[in-house]
Amino acid sequence: MFRRVLARFRIEFVTVLNPTSIQISPADRLRGILPDPEIAAISPIIEEIEELKLARNAAILAHNYMTPDIFHGVSDLRGDSLALARMAAETEADVIVVAGVHFMAETAKIANEEKTVLIPDTQAGCSLADAITGADVRLLKERYPGVPVVTYVNTSAEVKAESDICCTSGNAVQVVESLGVDRVIFLPDQYLGRWVATQTEIEIILWEGSCEVHERFTAEELRGYRNLNPGIQIIAHPECPPDVLQEADFVGSTAGMIDWVKHERPRQVVMVTECSMSDNVAAESPQTEFLRPCNLCPHMKRINLENIRDALRDMKNEVTIAPGIAGRAREAVERMLAVQV
Ligand code: 13P
Ligand code: SF4
Image 1 (cartoon, helix red, strand yellow):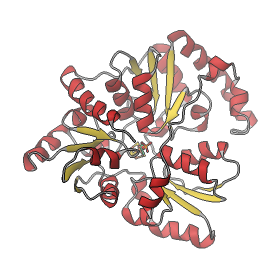
Image 2 (cartoon, helix red, strand yellow; image 1 turned 180 degrees about the vertical axis):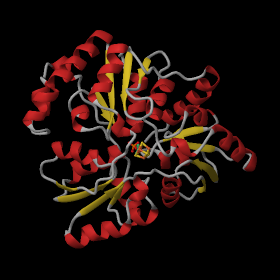
Image 3 (cartoon, helix red, strand yellow; image 1 turned 90 degrees about the vertical axis):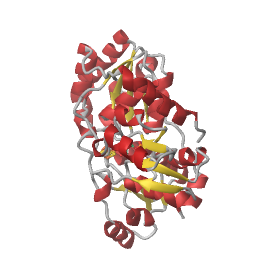
């Protein structure tokens, strides 16, 4: 079922104009998305961030999991990990603020070393990035000599530097198939790797990492939604366990899921992923009712308007990558960006 549905949808990147450049006030951008008293309370800090962006020639790149105040209120470009990497490589801004987690900011720096990249909270990590080290990858390469290493971008720059090519959930199948080999080592997400294995004939050697947010969903809870809401559509991120993905009508990256809702316009949907995303998409899809099992990513939720403002005002939390690592990590990221999706 996944292959059939996947084939019908191409991932599209979601981009927006810099709100400042088209002179839309915070209240106008957020009306109908947040309650009016909340908009009034956060408008001053949004104005402050807009002024800082102009003064620094900065762009805020926001992941789809950011809360609506960030996603709709201050971001200039937004999307999934793949879109953020591409946007970072192409932006004209001098300063990139990544409203996302640390590996996303590192990937932005790897993709565009000339730019100053800031992360509002340096502790915004990821359980997948913590699941593997560069030394682990070196050991795996000794164990499977000659087998290419495909590394999910949810990893440190050191791990990327040990890899042949990176991938995201939006291009993992295409990346694996681009290599023209019979088997690959796939790091570090066992569930994304298992899902890729259902989409290709290529043998996948797995590592046992997992996302602490997506592994909490269960097939049983999804069956419960279906039983109570006949006709509901279930769409899931491939970081979920296989029995959860079996219940899904569509599997895709965060951008893939957003596009699916916009194209399919389902009456009712459950987005089986971090729950801020439903808030962001609901604002743009009034025809759809979103049922919301709410698993939050504690790392993504470290980013807020205050620390975005502070990072820009004080130019702090700049992301740097050791020169011995940056060049090799860049090769793996650039190979990924060259793969057509
Ligand atoms: P996407 O690349 O699909 O946005 O996923 C990133 C992520 O961290 C999901 O948990
Ligand atoms: Fe990492 Fe999971 Fe959070 Fe995504 S949702 S950043 S994979 S911990």
